[in-house]
Each structure stands twice: as C-alpha cells, then as structure tokens.
Image (cartoon, rainbow, N blue to C red; front, top):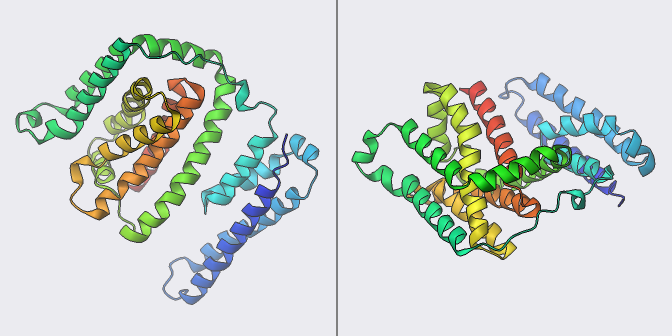
Length: 324
C-alpha cells in the first residue's frame, strides 16, 4: 500500500489558499455581501477541519488505516466547498483499502461479431437521428415525448437484453466490490468536471447549457416525470448506446473513451450550436462521457457506468428541485 498522505497535505494547502482568498474578497466587499458574518463563520469551520486534516496527515499510515473517521468527516465538509480538497481526501481514503481495482471481477472482453457491430451501428445511428434530426421535423413534434422515450427504452432493452442481463447478474453478485470502485470513480469524475467547468464559467459566466435550461423548465412543469427520465431513462439508454454499443465498434481503449465521450457531449448540445458559448459546453458533457467510458472499459460491466450516471443525475435532480 503506497503512502499517499501527501494528498492530505495538498488538500490542506489548497483549502488554506481558498480561505485566505475568500476572506480577502469578503473583507473588500463586506458592505455589499449578503450574509457576511455567517459566511466568515463557515470559513472558520472549514479552517478548523483543515487543521484537523493536517494533524491526521502527520500520523502513521498504519494508524490511519484503522482510525480514519476524522478524515472522512473533514473530507465530506471540504468536498462541499471548494470540492477539490475533499476529493483529495477521498482519494487518500481509497488508498487505505486493501481491496484494489485488481480484485474486480475479471470479465473477458470478447471480440465483437459482425452482428454485434451491425447492431451497434444501427443503434447509434437511430439514436442520433431521433435526438438530433427528427425533432426538427413538424410531424415529429406531434408525437408525445413520453411515447418516444418509452419506445427508445423498450428498443434498447430488447436489443441488448442478453448483455444487460449478464452484466446485471455479475454486478449484483459482486456489489460489495463494485460499490467502492463506483464511489471512488464518481468523486474523481466530479473533481475533473469541476476543473473543466472553471474555464467554461469564466467564459460564459454563471449561465447553463441550453440542454440544462430545458431540463430546468421540465422540472418546474413535470418534476416527477423529469426525475424518472433523468435518473432511470437517461442512465440506462445513454450508457447502453454510448458505452456498450461504442465498445463494440472500437477495440482501442483511448479511441473508445475519446470518441464515446465527445459524441455523448455533442448530442447534449446538438440542438443549440449557434454560438461559441453554447458549443463550449460540449467539453463539459464530453468530460462526463469520457469518465463514464473509462469506468466501463476498466470493469467491462455496463452497470458500473449506469450507476455513476445515476448518481450524477440524481444529485443534479435533487439540487434542481431545491432551486426551482
């Protein structure tokens, strides 16, 4: 087991920088900043947790392996804001576990047959047409949206029943091994997405993509149906199409991850590519897609990426419901 206490020290350093910069900003703008005193109080709590985390980082690694509750608490708090220090804390905690990714079930990667390739090509083309082209046709808009979603979901389940059923059985049987992997990869994915979001926010301000705006409107009008679509329909259909289908088309890991991710990203903004400010969101969604693709490739089980996709959409849905 490698000693990764340096991650805790880096987390503390980043948090101190964040606290200092934020305090300076609050001090300069305290007259116009709503809730100045509560905000400073929250920063002081973060400073205390940072101090605790630093003290833990100096303890022996064998001790931390058996006594890491304080690190868990500090990491959870620091994950809430500004995220990265908390992610580093979780990465360190994952390094303490004896179970490594090598203990994941070994699922043999079978070379795709001609039928598998044809099925994957047809699936991808049909999905792309339905998502990007058909909505522009007048007759298509007369069909209720839920009918389209149901047809897509049923078609996906029928076409890939064998693969989905096989992966699900393995997933349930080895759930105790998969869950730590899913949680670890999810937090890593969240950290990467946060870093990618920084330049996007600097360019576009606090705006959101047209895709997210549409979802926000749906949450205000049909919240229950939107939650079901976001948390159940989207993870199953999108992971089956972009990960399971694409894996049959590309034998090279890097090609699979990049192409799967960018096609996934492009289709999330394809209906509003009228300006650079909208196109740039492709990178945000592509980052999510590539992280999910890597998780799927490393485990060769589609329910790993489906679970990560579910967590991402579920947390986003809960946050949207609270806001709207």
